[in-house]
Length: 192
Image 1 (cartoon, helix red, strand yellow):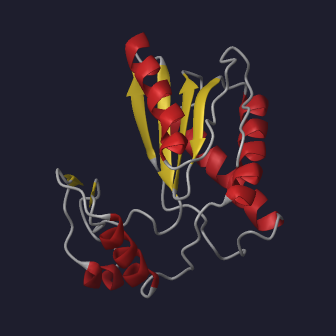
Image 2 (tube, one colour):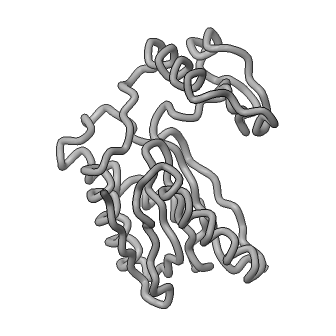
């Protein structure tokens, strides 16, 4: 039985099918992306260096339709507020959240909405908010695709995922972004 959803998605252009870290994509759908290299299904056992990843992103920027925009601290505040609105309005219970420079994690308790719908709603509201605040243009997709929903089936999985999400921003020198009151259907986030 599913007790929670670990929802993840990337900012536009940040985890392409032929990303040097590996990918869960089974194909490269955009012909222009094929020049960036071959696809490797799954996460590679040996991860590329930060320099290799930067070089790949720079090369990718030259073939992407839209500008590659990282999520900065101003964006974090906008996204956090928008997430909080959706979580409150939909009566979700959010156990953990991390807004990273190139992706997002949320852990939400099982709800009448399926994980895919949660992601869709969260992406749409946040994209609209970024556009309204002038942080993205109307034609910029903001997000890199429909994301992933990893089912959490045990209390131990939930606890492990909370810890994983909690540590994500800390690894890059950002503060913890997690609600310490999971019974509340809102989200508290802090940004540096």
